[in-house]
Image (tube, rainbow, N blue to C red; front, side):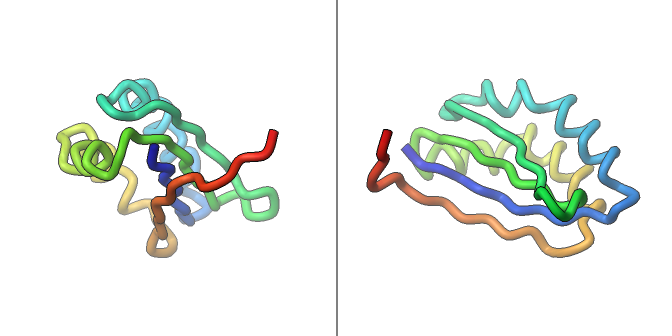
Length: 98
């Protein structure tokens, strides 16, 4: 299982536009083959900073999403709203404590 975190900083006046686009597409993203979990987080102190947290079968599944028409359509709306370049990383869980 691959965990993907993407941190995005939006122009303050574009936050609602981002949220509308996310909510319109979140079920499609979550139901994309290979995606098992999707969360949207908002920074506690900076209301224009968001992170997506998702679980994927593996890097190949994530790349299939990133090459899909769904991703391209979501990203085409999202990208112009950024105030800073987004950052992303993928990781595999090593240890979990209950």
